Picture 1 (cartoon, rainbow, N blue to C red):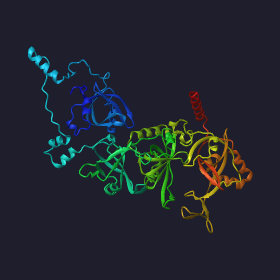
Picture 2 (picture 1 turned 90 degrees about the vertical axis):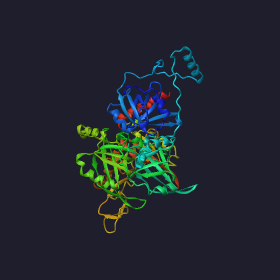
Picture 3 (picture 1 turned 120 degrees about the horizontal axis):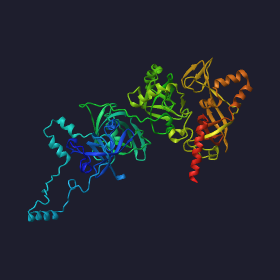
Picture 4 (picture 1 turned 180 degrees about the vertical axis):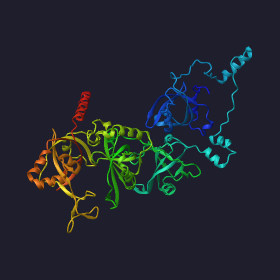
Length: 626
C-alpha cells in the first residue's frame, strides 16, 4: 500500500461515526498533527490534507507513541474507532481504539492541492450533466466522461451484519454482532452501546428518604481492560434486580444504560461521567469467553504535592519507598464499638519528602505483615485510592477499595528504585507536613495557602458556623500558662483517657482493659501573637511537642525532679519563637458565652528561604494589582 494520506479520510469518518464492524472499513490513513500527552493517553489532530478532526488514542496505544512508532507529522492507518459528538461544545472527538503506524514523521504538514485535477472532483447539477452529454455527442470527442449514477439501496447496519453472518453458528454470530465500546469513548449523547467490564468494587444497598418518598440505592465500580473506571448507580427496582446479579471480580456485558456528568460529591472515581442502570438495562455475565484482568491505572501524586488534597473528597494514588512499618494496633470504632486493626507505614519519594499511610483492616494484617518481613529491603509500594487527611499536617489513609502493590512492575517503580539505590538512601528526608513549598502546586495548602493575620480570625466571630474553616498563620508563642492542665493520662494502645483502676493500674474504657502503665499526652492552650492581634490556641500532643521540644512525660519528670522553677523556665524557652500554624476555627459555647475555638492542626518551624519566596510572590501580586 502506498504511504500516503487517504483522500476524504475525515469525511469517511464523519459519515460513519460508529462502524458496526472494523472489517467493513475502507482504507483510512491520516496524518498525525499536534501530538501531545494528556494523562496516560495521547491527543492529536487527524488530518487528510483538507479537513481536520480532534482525536485521542486509547490508553493501550500509548506504548506505540513512547516506542516512536507513532510520531508527530507521521501517518497512521485507523483500523477501528468511535466518533463522539458533544453538542454542548459543538465539537466531535475521534476515539481511536485500533491503529497502526504507516510512516514516520513527514517533512511538513500534508496539504491537498486544490488545483490538482486528479484529486479534485467536479460536481455538476443534473441539467449541466445533460448539456455536457449533448456536447460530447455533437462534437464527437471524448470530452468529460460521466459515469451513470449508481442506484443506492439503504440498509440498516443490522441488515448488513445479518446478511454477512447468516450462515455462521449462533455463538459466532453473537461474537460478530456485539461491538464492545471502551469506557473512554462513552458520553451522555451516545445511543446504544455495549461495554465489557469487571466489577472492581461493590457497595451495599442503602435506603434513603426524601420528599418523593423512600427508596434504595447501591453503587458499583466498573473497570474495562484498558483500566478505565466508571461508577454505576442503581435505584429501587434496578437495585433489587441487579444487586445479587453483580458479583465482585466477575466480568459482564452491560448495555441499555445512561450516562450523565458525574456528581463529584458522591463519586470518587476518576471519570467525568457516571452510569445509571434501570430495570430495563441488560446485564450478561461473561462465561464462554476468556475473561480479562484490568490493568491497574495509577495517577500518582508526588508526596510534596499532597497539600491541596487535604480533607478534600478527591482520592489520590501514591508511590514510594517504605522507610518504616509500625506494629499493628487495635482501634475501637465509636459507631459500633467494633475493634479494627491499623498499621502505619512511612514512605518517601524523589521529592525527598515522607508521609505516613494508615493501613486498615485486612491491609494492616496481610500486606502490613508482608512489609514488616521485608522492611530491611526497603520495598517500593504503589497504593491506589487513598484519602488525604490533616493529621501531622498531611497524612494518608486506606479505604475498603484501596489497592496496595508491592514492588510493582511499572516504570515509575523502577525509576524510584534506581533513585533510592543511587542517592535516596543517603539523602536527608523530611515529613511533607514539616517542609512545604510556598507554591500551590507544591502542595502547600497545609501551611502557605489561606494565609491570614490573626486579626482576620479574631474580628470575624461568625467564622466556622456552618463547618470548620482552615487558615494558615505565622505567629509567635507569646505566653504559656504554667498553672493550666498541661496533659492527661492516656492509654498506650489507643491514646484515650484512662482512669485509675481499683487496686492498682489504669482502666481504658476504649480498650476495655487494665494496664499497669500509662503515658502522658499534652492538652493545653497557648497565647500566640503577630503584628495585628493575639489569640489563644488549643494545642494537642504532637503539635505541643514541637513547641516545647519534649514529651509530656519528659516535662512531668523535669517538674517532679527539678522543681517548679525549672519547669517554668522550660515553658519560657518556648516563647517568642516564630512558627507556621495551620489552624481550624469553630464556634464554642462556654458558660452561655459564645466564643471561637482555634485549634492547631499542624505546626512547622519557620523556613526563612521558603518564607522569603512567599513574601516576594505577595509583593509581586501587589505590584500587578496597582
